[in-house]
Length: 242
Image (cartoon, rainbow, N blue to C red; front, side):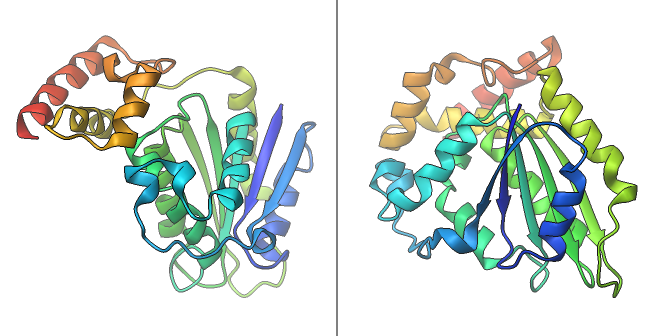
């Protein structure tokens, strides 16, 4: 199995050290991306990625290689310390550049592990924010580890190993989990947006070319009969609203 580690910290200390401890006992291929080294310019809010497609982003050459690595890996590990009760600017900038995934979810077979550390508070809130973002991307399952150091200079990850083990076993199983009703709701909403009088060009091309326009959720997802019915109903409601 191949895993991609995206380190949102500008340093390689507590957060990075926690990740290294958590993965040390697992025999797999790990590739690391340190966002501080990628030198991605700040997102300028031009909306090109939303309207014309991500390839028209002025920073596409910096962002797309990371996105391609996400596509190619079996599991994603995203790490960030808490800065001012949020993710670091490095990670936020990367997530801003990939915000088009909210409109065009596509990682329905991927699973992710989120690792957040803090010297104070906000770790659970930040982990939940990353979790929510990944689920909007379409990620099938997200495991969260949030660590409060409490003034300690080193990280003890022993109590979090079981969560890491669940993540690795889940990736290896290739089993897909049923999405939540919230995930299905957002999927139906973005699909319905393609039925407005003038749909967003890039969105419409994506939903049509992938065949998702005719699906109740991502093709590979484990959607039971209740959620299939819910998806159809909520989609019709959104379609009428839009």
